[in-house]
Length: 162
Image (cartoon, rainbow, N blue to C red; front, side, top):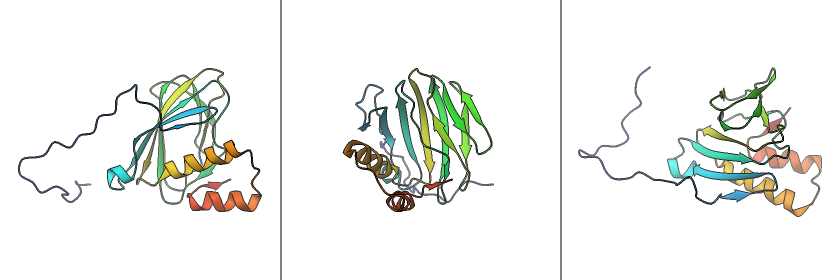
């Protein structure tokens, strides 16, 4: 394996870093989770999306699913997060990491009764924030979607439930 083709051709480098402070307000708040859009696919030229997922003590998280176009990685920062790797659920602790390639069945849940936090990274950088915000809007509306509406919503966002 080698390094990818060059993408920057300047001679001196440039000042282009982006700092996000730990105390920045969340970009999305739901009844169970605060989501921080650390870097979106749009802000990384499609290379990756990185999100901090701060879960409250109430159970939350998606059912088993897979993606056709993106990988997903999980890194537990605090608390206990149940991670599913397609074969088994495990209680993941701070420092535990799970990588799921395209097509890999996975899920996560906070069932500990305590707050938990983790990083989620998607590569390449799909617009997952549209998916997160869509879920929050559906939940806030109290509207029940039909099976067909859910299937279409998930399809638009490369989410295939199993």
